[in-house]
Length: 493
Image (cartoon, rainbow, N blue to C red; front, side, top):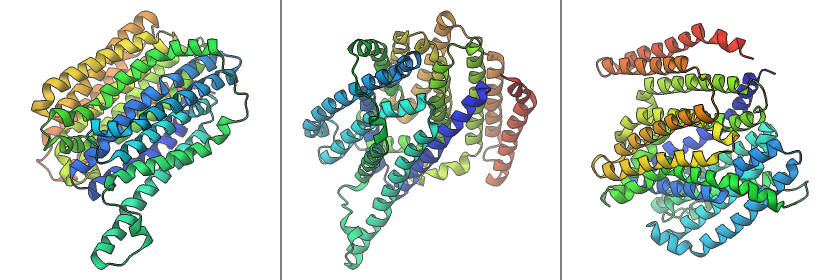
């Protein structure tokens, strides 16, 4: 089978498991922003999930990618799987217990002393996420994308259902009870003091159900712990822990420090606005995530092929073309896409194009970063992301007090851009791939050109006329691809 078609097929399946759940999950954003129309409330949700993202990296400590690397090269994949799984089971149990014992102190440290239950639920969310990491990685390595997709979709369907249940059915029943005195079982299930915290409880319940669905992945093999193999896996994985932590600084740390660098009366408000607008870049993040799920095992499994580098170059080119189309399509339709969040949050809509391009750069970096994973030089990945994290921290600390979340958006763009450039030049030295930079720059520049042209008539014509003209540009971009690149794609083998 044509490797590009295979990758596209895997991406489509992973995309389905990512797009549908992510779309449903992102529907929680309008649900929460319209129900909790004070950005402060959504700020709580944004901050806690930022902490969850950070701690997730520590709980998995690069073992997922280490499993891919060693299992793809080993004749005894079950031993690699068993060793990685035992490692994660032991570390997750230990770390979860320690954090739960100090949950009250953590709640005070994070300014949620009135909501220790939020912290407890968050710790359990992280723990259950970690327990599922290696089983999900095994499904991906074995190209069992359908089961992977089914469980991922079930998780989010349940999560969304529970959010609707708590915030629509139970909350409305509670408010009706206050107004009329009519009691109901649904009203008794809602506590206004928990409020937006029900989103964390819903996530935890969905994770527990997903663990049950993955039960088969924890059985059917001999639990064998290869100590020597484990040490090798740790040596490979620990630099990736640094990569992950530094990457999370780039991705989420801005939402954590916004609250602390801004006056107390506006901190969580600004976090809520920024967090909501960040999610408008939904299609870009979904596409990149779906691509990553399919691409990482694809690159590892095709490393031994003689034309693997040529294939990597083709993948990069069509990845950028796809991301450029997503950027253009989103920006050309922003007048109605912005209604994804309620009006009090739209004050931050100007950061959307900055964040879209930033995530495009991040996607390119993910493509480029395969060189240090394939060559085992993960230390370079750590160094690159540390540089990116340093840029993020410096810009945020210097400029947030003056420019708020706008500074955070620019910091994200500059950080990912610098990481992309450094990885490209290091890759040329250690794992040279002849990327078609001419075509990559051409399609990205066309998307940017059409976007800047649209700004010249923005506000001078009606919204409907603007949308028609804008989408003509989107169709023109697609026509240019059809004319110049589709024939090359059909010839790719």
